[in-house]
Amino acid sequence: MDFTVFDKPGAKVKLASISEKPPRGLTQEHAREEFETLGQELFDLQDLLWGSRQHSVLVILQGRDSAGKDGAIKHVVGSLNPRGVHVTSFGAPTPEELEHDFLWRVHRHAPRRGEFAIFNRSHYEDVLVVRVHDLVPKSLWKERYDHIRDFEELLAEHGTIILKFFLHISRGEQKKRLLKREEDPRTSWKLNAGDWEERELWDEYTEAYEEALSRTSTEMAPWIVVPADAKWYRNLVVARAIADALRPHRKAWQQHLDEQGARKRAELEAWRRGRR
Ligand code: ATP
Image 1 (cartoon, rainbow, N blue to C red):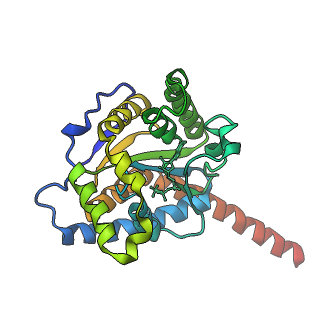
Image 2 (cartoon, rainbow, N blue to C red):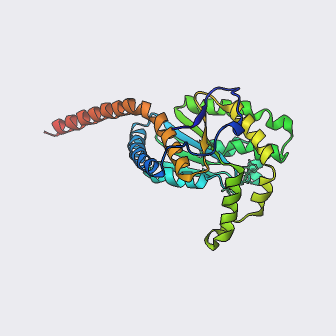
């Protein structure tokens, strides 16, 4: 499987040189089988995460309009136990949110231990749409990369496993998706002239994404560029990357639960003995 991971600050990110398509040779049928196997594994890993309360997971999904953030969430969450999963969507900030620092509204949705949080858009909008549309002075958003790195480091130190996905679609695929929405009356509710306006700023967004990815990629909070022109491959990559990040913890989580089980059993036995 083929996807690009950035895990060092200052990495050279050139989105034009990363394919938006699935690799040749991988069939949709094979991908579906693998996705199902990964889904079962994710379900089991989430159960251990929940029970052992040693870590939390934060998945951040970013991408242009129609890149498939909702679809990716639907498929990945579909593999998980809804208990302990929280999805938060970040739209334009409210007046109250604008009166606080940009991380204020985000921090309160960070997952507690045992939880699996998914962000549909995130604090990255504050260096993407905000930068492209000049919503705050440059002197302010320029500082945000460092604030974001520090914030994510803080979460990671508290045991949060962070994965950031950029759903990478091509310009042609976006046009196809936006037009398809118009053809089908069942998707008319999604129509939005703003999507076409944002599309005209394609290169400005590319630049903003490249700088964001370059400056905020770290080992503890890597960026994964997901080839997203094919939905089935996008889902597979996201599931695979999450499973890859959680798998190394399986043994420790299981051990923690086993120790807890032994302790609880001893307590119960002592209680029974006391009643005799
Ligand atoms: P989506 O396009 O994510 O499926 P949507 O079109 O239904 O969602 P909302 O979820 O209401 O719309 O809001 C998304 C919009 O909010 C996007 O255009 C995004 O750029 C904007 N947005 C998110 N965060 C910020 C921010 N910090 N400042 C300004 N605009 C923001």
